[in-house]
Length: 172
Ligand code: NI
Image (cartoon, rainbow, N blue to C red; front, top):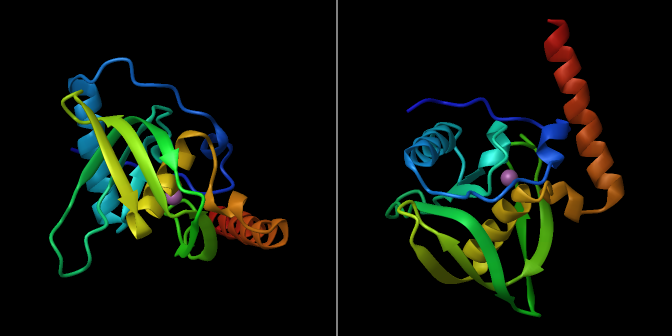
């Protein structure tokens, strides 16, 4: 297992659309292990493969509360089968948008089909925070960040500050 560097917005690689995983093999399982290690070390509750520069439709999540049981999830080629018309608003953050948070409205229930780490087809009906996290991570596979779902004014402010912080860090 290895920690992978996490790309930070406005890196153009975060805007690319990822391709489906044709076969769940040992190489994919090694990537999954790296994603979990990188996510827990960050720490974060979710990480999608494109966030470490691997453009495959694969994500990991663990939204266990601090003292709760760990509930690790791996989703390969996830697809939304159904989404509710009703929406819920949660404050979102992202390891690729460090230090910034914003309220985002999304469908509050979704049904998702995906492959697990053995390549077996699974389905999950998610609601509440889990549904939001799932949609947030799935957005990464299409090159969409949570800041793309907020006002342009706020998005541009955040992206400008991140770009400036990167220039300062590079100049040091
Ligand atoms: Ni994210």
